[in-house]
Image (cartoon, rainbow, N blue to C red; front, top):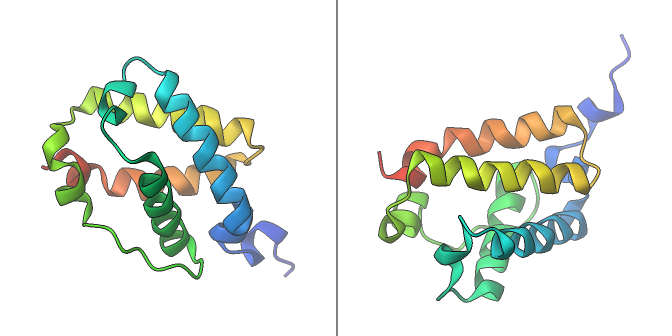
Amino acid sequence: METSTTQKLSLYQRLGGEEGIKKFLNDLFDRHQKNPKISPFLEHVDLEKLKRLALEFFSMGTGGPLKYTGRDMRSAHAHLHLTEENFEDSNSDILLTLRENGIDQETTDEVFSILNSLKGEVLGK
């Protein structure tokens, strides 16, 4: 039985590897900064450091070579006191950015499966 190309490639590869993920994250943080519901959470943040940590996180979580060196999700987000609405606002930006970066629906679904599995940690529940 023949397998599809998507099944042969890791999620990391389907997201474009390091360069594809960097582009996605740059686009995402640009969108977040323009989103009045999310931008207040980024006001006093070192965006370059956050992008680096997000790249490590996405790489490690999708089968790439980088190791995540940041704090666990609960600790990293605890001071933000995020709500379900904040989580959904961020997910909306992520979805739009994945689409704009030409990421197919199957890959998008897999990314959201991972992100949604972390929801409790991010929201501190």
